Image 1 (cartoon, rainbow, N blue to C red):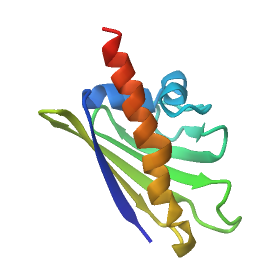
Image 2: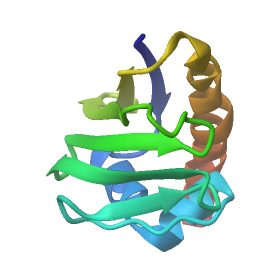
Image 3: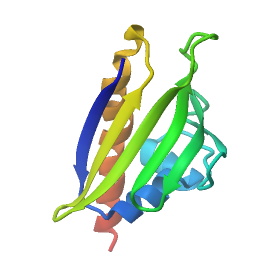
Length: 132
């Protein structure tokens, strides 16, 4: 199973990309503890350890590809893969997240990305713009 979700953010692709791969900023934008790296092949955890994975490919301001799994995955279940694309548009950034290699039981992750990432990210980046 796979799916794709997208959202427009009113900040630059580079700003979102850098926040995604920074432990402190990732934690602040999701509201949960994250330990993440901006290096390929580095392991990461997010959402207080609920999510773990490995960075596969990183192209600054453009693309992040990661192996990704949660504590809810079966022990013998393969890692899933997420591809995140940051496309610059007049309004800011169109973020598109493709999530692959999931089981049929993993359908809740689509709404999870919206509720646990996109919504708090929007608040985080809007708050950051108001400080300026």
